[in-house]
Length: 464
Image (cartoon, rainbow, N blue to C red):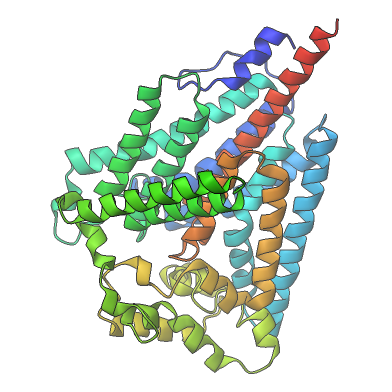
């Protein structure tokens, strides 16, 4: 591969990449992976076009299938790719052991265990898939381009829903600016999350594009979350940035400067939410009386941790929880109920604590104010379903991704935003969002691999 050809790897363009002669294996693997991603991003659009509801489950088959094909058919992997693949496979296997153990202990249905495992592990399976593909430069550019197109399409959908269809003006449809996630309860949050995730990636990595253009992408994404009233998206991204900065702290003076800058920003933001109507939704959280040990927000947010232990029948429940899909994760919280006709014949099981937590939400005057106060959030769901062992196993594979795949601060930042979202609502188990993040993390790893190859060839040519 020539030096000039490799130089293209550092650019990002929304125009079509250069063509490549098809290479057996690479084309099949990348295209199959793209179809797996499509199956997770577009089922709601297809549902709106009258596809049957099982279309929402296709990605559970496509993502593992694509991973299996890539692992068995890919040739020419580097030693680093092979090592990362083995580490991720070990993490996936350990989480599988925890899930099966919890299911057996609590007599949960097999379908519960399967869906719970896939909802939580799919993004890691996709990262493994993308990292394991020995992509040529052209295939990498094409793959990245399609991911960008999917993300842009999400924001285009949102703009049409807001400015053309004006869905937000209808009573009961205030949260109906959902981008690709039409008809999904938390679709407005997912759509906003995908928009700002793509904007962050593009702003940082599209160095070949003018600053004003990259800034315009960020403005469009910010407008998306404002239109969708997805307040928690901004909180998640601010929280992720703060954590990343604290992790990377080295210069105390610089740290103090950014702390002061952050205080100024928050002060200006505090002033702005009382001055501009489009920021008015953020006032929902500014009620000091609802916080504190006996505050309504605190009592509601931690309702899961009060109710779930009441159903423990053995000390092992502290370790393995009440069983996959039995508490407040996306599966037990509403997915089994929503698809009961489809899942009941597969021996799906439910647990009364899920209804009890929902009753706590209904009984609280804050229950319908914001998902920020919801007790049905990701980390609570993992703990309730799979116990302490589930949290440990999840963090273990997260550490593997952080250490081996997240080469840049950007990919670390994207991972941190997902983890912050886990404190708010069910985004840890929302494939339409987590698989997009996983795609960008995998793409970032592939891009850094090509850049490293470029540096090696430049060094080799300099020595000639």
